[in-house]
Length: 363
Image (tube, rainbow, N blue to C red; front, top):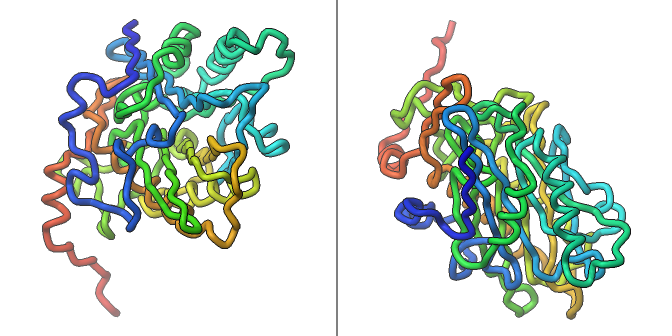
């Protein structure tokens, strides 16, 4: 079993072009220096990728807010678009409006091992010697299309590696960490991230998003519908089944928002998936967690939140596209192969005239 931590972009991924590199820009707001969730001060990301060819393509991703802890919780909100999922820790976030651990993402059947490992890691942190209650937050997607999910390959050492190597700066995207075996909109997907810098009431803030994309539907880019067949990389149909899709979204901001406002932010993050062509099927677990790294400070009035809402919508749309562009064609469990979305083929398709819709003849 190969396990590789990826605190930064792994070799070979930095040359892959992201959405903005292709001139695909969503929304008017600017981005942070890395166009990533780590543009929010005090937020780090780490991945551990777990592979055993040809059957295991899995891993764990950690979003680590430096200030979050059982003694120093951060304001947070959560929204469920469709609840076919195992988002551990959601009820306490809903009840108390606080986040007291990093947010970890992984494979469905590994979520419970990951939660246990996260508890152990947090209890060992300085200042947690007397902690007797802890709410670990772990989201998941079902990577069983390409990975032997029943093997539950993600273990404690993988969780600790992702947490211990989490860092700021550029974030590895595509087939890394919790995105190693995921598929979205007919293409190989994975982890994607983006950021925006909206102005709220004359003050500048940062909003960053990270997605674990693994959902069904038909990809839409700049108003065009794209499938594997239409971009020339294979037949359509290699996507998660209705009972195995999902998307986990993590939103971080340094705007001083309360839990109610952050729940409103999380709601917009899930709404944004519709822009990309998400189907929100019966079996898809579509969730967003939003937290603020500013537990104090002059609050932002509700009437001033519009630019932040728009930034989150735009950021999630871009992050999903980045997750596709960074991924690589993968052959996995059962010999199934899912094609990647080539940047060149995407640009060629967008530049070509739209194909006319065929309608049945009138009778």
